[in-house]
Image (cartoon, rainbow, N blue to C red; front, side, top):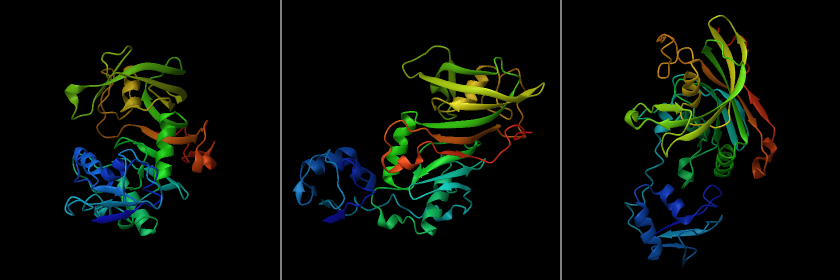
Length: 318
């Protein structure tokens, strides 16, 4: 038998979800079976699958030790680089400037030097997080940026922060602004684009998406992109983009759909413009606004806070 005492980062989640996160070798059907047959108990008693764990609860597992080995918390993160450009940090969250060429999470190449691993290494070295002291929670970023997109990204240092931030993003109470260098001059110079995005099942490996005026399948998702032209010359424009929705490759695909692809874009490029293999897509996440309209609990202090990169919007991509 193994006993685990529920800590703050484990609390306020269902019993089955806690076990699934903590012990990756256990399948979901097995977890349900173990709970139902009293091989998992809470405070010495049988508990329901959806029981919400509380700080101090004792979870007893009468399960083979091999199946409950903690394999999820490896120390591979210590192999990541030390470089982490921190723009803002407090006890609950951290906002960093992601560099071009770094993936946020592990991809098909099994990259160790991910932004997530850099974050874990930083927190571990600062003694702010220790995988040996955690059962089911690992600090992580609550949204993503493409490999070749630079800019601001939010990380959660506690499970409560992760839950609140994820819900706020879902409820559109965290506004994300980008700067893009695009081909051509958009007419009108300010507007809101309403269309639909569908993942192309024929290009799953490339993670390609298709933009259409109307939904083309049950999987089509509405996308809304607000933009404003800040400056332009005869060939290109600097555009500030506000993501109302946040879908895979939304900005890159949406700008290409209106015939104004990003300079340096390789995947989504209109036939009107040549691909430039010498530069990366000219896109940067430049500003985050915590536009809370409902209670943010322990993160209420962030309401109306603006976090920006110190850049010159008119000349950044020149």
